Length: 504
Image (cartoon, rainbow, N blue to C red; front, side):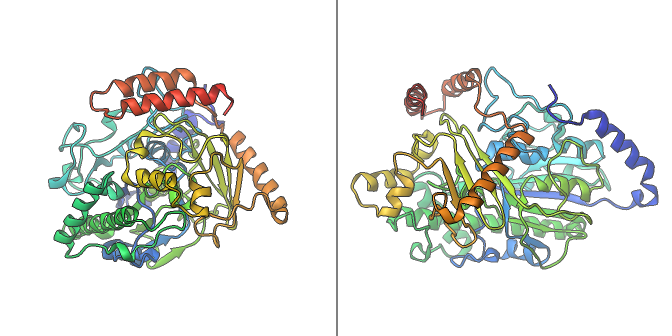
């Protein structure tokens, strides 16, 4: 069933109309479009004010382009976020909101009229590719039809691998523009444990001449200044420095090929830092993303403070390439002459691997409202992915020994969560003062509560995942021979089912 008020016919008519009215301007050279997408990275770059490191290459993109200070993902975990961005639609609208869902017996197919934008670029004559941006460093992955290995996709729906022509723009024809997605590991470079973080620090010292001093790290107040957490965060910052160096090599390649100034470069993340209250959650630590755009027609040295949803890069990219935007698309062209800044942005978190949750948020210029649909479950529910990390193991050990302060205990290890949270986020940087129970903010709470309800209805938020999808996905996931976390996942699933029986 088509959940949209428009259909594929509308898109087809739009394409015909654009072709008929394009006139002489249609012959103008079309820019290349290059996305640089970083895993598990918050805006911890020196151009965003991070003092513990320098990131000269990302800073250069910002200096020569426009930096967005209030850009947020629509989902704080990779696969639903990437599913949303590649279609320009909220992951909840297209049914791709549960992390890595649709990979078992039950499949997810996009609604009528919704298409991944590489298909649209390809139909418009662009060479479409996805890789590392440096052919000699393409990461291992699924084979492309031509040009080596494809980079990370991680889409939650069924898609045609043929929408990518290869892994690198070097495979394009003479004069052919390209749409390239560079996929970089970002914060994932530091791994899960103390040993992997140590190796990353050694690599940074060898390649960059120094490593980040853990003593220079600024942690959110709900994390204790424990050596494991400080060392991990320092390694995370070194991962960003190494990522910045990779970005620098891509820029140098574009310059060497003489195409930097005819290429729209968009740099962003797929979710925030992977930490206890970061990735998977709707606070700034999980949803705030760097967003820097440089290229033809982009203001140099610009700083934009308007609210942006990361899906907007889909519409912005199509517009730069002169490709009509599908009527089903919820993204906005950030540089349109008639651009209307958003007065609110929305985000959603649902099942992550085996851990069931449902959280929704609305953010305005002044407030962040979060609704927890399972408030009787703790923030740090069992989750094999997160529980395998040394930082989470350390936090749990400190909690058991009584070494955490009151704020850390209340935010990380309370047995329950509030059903509603309200933060004056511009002044409450880490979202630690919940104003939902404050009578002075009752009117704001009610307004945002109603606005979120309308958004859920308008965007056709489907709510919880069917049991058949959950069971089939988990059966396939647990059967994978590489899955060393299977026993932990089975225990978590049992706990989820117990809580469901108890109405939690």
